[in-house]
Every structure is written in structure tokens, then in C-alpha cells.
Amino acid sequence: MIRFENVTMVYDQKSRLGSENARPGLDDVTIEIDRGDFAFLVGASGSGKSTFLRLILREIVATGGAVHVAGQNVARIPSWRVPKLRRGIGVVFQDFRLLPQKNVFENVAFAMQVVGESRSAIRDHVPEILKLVGLEGKEKRRPDELSGGEQQRVAIARAIANKPQILLADEPTGNLDPATSVGIMNVLDRINQNGTTVLMATHDDGIVNSMRRRVVELSLGKIVRDETAGEYTSMIPVINQDGTRELRQADHSTWHKPQTGSQAFAPFDTEDDLP
Amino acid sequence: MKIGFILGEVGSGLRRNLSMVVSVVLVTFISLTFVGTAALMQMQVTQMKGYWYDKVQVAIYLCGEHNEGTNCTTGAVSEGQRGEIESMLGSSAVKPYVDSFEYESKEQAVTHFREQFSNSSMIDTVTADQLPESFRVSLVDPEKYQIIKELFSSMDGVDVVVDQRELLEKVFSIINIASVVAIGIAGVMILCAVLLVGTTIRLSAYLRRRETGIMRLVGASKSSLQLPFVLEGIVSALIGALLAGGVLWAAVKFLIDGKLALEYKDTAFISTGEVFMVAPWLILLGVILAGVSSLVTLRRYLKV
Image 1 (spheres, rainbow over the protein chains, first blue to last red):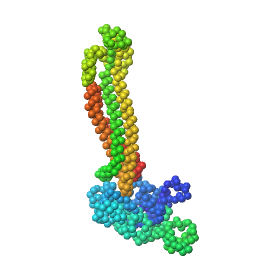
Image 2 (image 1 turned 30 degrees about the horizontal axis):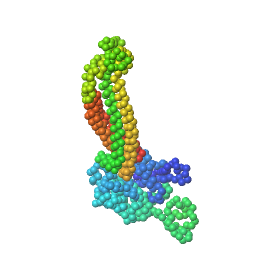
Image 3 (image 1 turned 90 degrees about the vertical axis):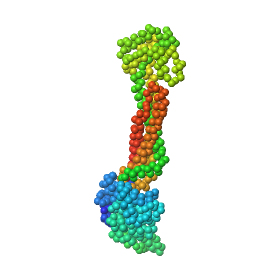
Image 4 (image 1 turned 90 degrees about the horizontal axis):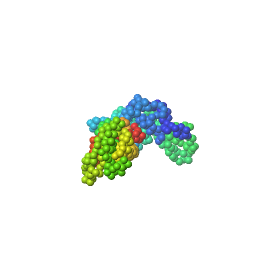
């Protein structure tokens, strides 16, 4: 469904090439996500998660390699066909991005109006989707009358209104409390069970660890881990030699830096013996 | 893409951006009014030329009792002198240039004068004695006026040779200067209008970036993304163009048809018919300018 072949994305090539911190957004990434998969994309901020998602949407075009979505090399799609590609991909964001002056029904219907669906199709289909995401009876509410979790459900409903084969979610639970997040994850899981490929970028280790789905971890633009039923830990407690404790970020980039020598024990870092 | 949906977007854009839309309407209105005025003035000149150039004559005014012209030393023109001038007009040297000529006596001059200035209070005070006798000469080619002037102005009994076309040319040159001024103002105003449409569309695109962002994500085509904005610019310009057409029509209707044409009955004036010839071009010009300006702006500020 989604296939990356040696994809490299270098932002602002001219100014970065000569600089010391020259570093691509994605660096020679090769991965395949199959139809019907549910995959988590994890990693620290700046690890390339958003770049990964934007490449799929063809908001940006890779500077090297090829991105295939639904069998098409997206770089080869002429610009006037890009909207057609995007109709097959639903997107959900951390900040919901609803239209404040439209009610729930209109927000979902907007996605269908934009692609030219008929009024009767909208009337039939929107209530179905709202039922799927658990928003029956709230059609007439405006976004500011809804809780965060409900707003995200509206956003998900809008994302799947045009029956996309792929659903991209960029930290959909980033603004929500854990209990609400579970509800959102249930909705995404239900959508996945209906056959939609779901790719979710997240920082939320609790969700990743409880879902036990495929986990792809990015660090500094490279894939450092790809497990079919993985876990994710963003913070590792470290006990220093002098007995103090601190939290260390589980960022692979820190492995390459020489430690200060004060570190004695990192209980959860299984690859601690790397140089 | 449903037309109703696009029109709804246009409507919401116009409402949200009302003050800018009003300024676009006004600037297009004023600039197109100037363009239209210049066009109408040129039409007026053409019309007057067509009408007058057939009629204008070279007038050879003959000496009256009180004339002090160099050829009028003997007082009023005598029968003999008049006969000489008449035979000169009929001679083989002059004939090729002359289409026709006629003699206008003092009495006829008074009659013509009264016809021309029928609604002026002057007519009652004018008597036949105050008006000169003249020969009215129509030329085959009005440009050859100089030849007639040279031949006749030195003849005895001739007071002065006047080319009526020269008087008209003065009027035309004033109208032409006015047209150039109008075109100049129109040019500056059109530039203003184009830039203002661009700014308005940019502001509109910025105000609606949330909608357009969502539209892009759910796969709106380029045309359905941009069309509402382009239409917004075009609708504003169209309103301005219609206002300009209306104002020109009213000006012609009430100032020319209702006033000038009544006062100067023997002058050919443009009428509202000409406004209907000019107005469609004004509307087309407004629509094209607004459309192009908004498309160019969107190319930079609203990418798909």
C-alpha cells in the first residue's frame, strides 16, 4: 500500500550542504506498509515522522528514492492528479483542524462537498460515519460545544468521509487525556478492521505498548526499529554513579556521543553496550 | 464540484472581506468610468468629424460698410467686385478644387443666424446690416483650403477667408486632450484596481486558509480550490463595471441628451446608444483584469 524505496529528503539543499549540521529529514529509508496494516510511527521530535507523512501526501517530493502509494510513484503523478491521490488518503491531526463556524454534520459533509458528492449521497453517508465514530445525536453541535475527544472524532469522521484506503494520523491523541485517547484508539482500530490502512505517528508510549501493533521507530531520519508487535519507550530512567536518578531520552543519537562516564546503570536500555 | 457549493464559498468570502470588496468595487468603478469617458469622447469626435466635414465650408466674407480689412479701402463690396469673385470661383484654375459654392446675402445670413441661435436672446438685436455677405464654398478636398485662401484673400472686396474646419479642429483638440487625460487617469486607476484585487484575494485566501487547508487535504481539485477566489475578484470587478456603465449612461442621458443636444440642435452628439456599445467592453475589461490579477496572486499564495 505504501512503499518507500531508499527515500531521502533533504530540506533546503543549498544552505545545508556546506553546513556542519547538514542532516536530511529522511535518510535512505526503505519500508513497506501493507494493505490493512496498523502501524505506529514513533521517534523523537525532528526524527522525520512528519516528513514521512508529508511525503505520502505528496505535500513534498523526496529528493532521492521513490515513494509508492497504492502502486503509484507519487513523484511521477502530475500536479493536477495530486488531488485524486489525496482523496484516497484521510488525515487526522493533533489540533483537529475543524471549521469553527460549521456544525458537526457540516464539517464532515464539507469533505464530501469539496470532491463533488451529491446532496443525497452526503445525507445518506454522513450519519453512518458519525455513528461509526460514536457521535450520533451530536450533528448540530459546533466544535466549540464539544470536548477534545469529540472534536477529534469529528476530524476522524471527516478524514474517512470519502472512504480512503489509507488513514494517516499525526499525533491524534497528543492533546487528549489518556482515557479519551483510548476512545480515539478504539475508533481508529474499528476503522482499521474495516480494511483501511492506518499509519499513526505518536509519542504516546502507553498507547503503543497496549495496542501491540507494528512499530516503526525513526531517529534522525533513519529507521532504527521495525517490529510487528512492538513497544516504545520515550524516556529511560537512569541511576547515576552518585546515586541520583534522572530521565534520559531514548534517542538513538545519544548512543553515538561519548557518555560523561557518570552513568552506571540504565535498566530498560537493552542495547546499552553499544559504543 | 457543485456550483451551489462554489457560489456559497464565493458568498462567504465576499461577506467576510466586505470592506476590501467595497474598495475593489469603487476603484474598478472609477477606473472604468474614466476608460468609458475617454472612449465616449473619441466617439463624439468621430461623430462630429463625420457630420461636420461634409458640411464645413470655406467662407469668403465680403467687405461691409464698416470693415477695416486691407482689401476694404473702398468701403462695402461693389457689384463689380462681387461679380469678379464669383467668376473667379467658376474659373478653370479654381474649379477643380471647388465642389460647390453659393452666395449668402445679408438677409440670408440673418435667417441662418436666427435658426442657429433660436434659443438665444441675441437674435432680436442682430440686424442684416451687422452681418457680412459671403460666398460659401464647399471644397472637394477640405485639406486644400490653403489654395483658396491664397487666391481670394488678396482680392478687392474680400474681407477675410475663414476655414470653418479650423474652428472645429480647436474643439476636437480640446476633446482629444481631455481624452488623453482621462486615459492617463484611467491607466493609474486600473493599476490600482489590479493591485487592489491582488491584495484582496491574498487577504481572502489568508482569512480562509483553514478551509483551503482542509480542502487540499481531502483532495479538492485545483480549480475548485481557486475558483471561489477568482470569482470573488470577478464579481467585485463586475459590480464596479456595471456601476461605471450606469454612471456613463446617466451622464449621457441627462447631460448630453437632456441638455447639450437640446441647446445645440445642429451638432451631432453621441447618445445612450453609444454607451451601450462601450459598456460591454468595460465589463469585459473589468472581468479580465480581475480574473488575471487573482489567478496570478493565487499562483503564489494558494498552492495545491
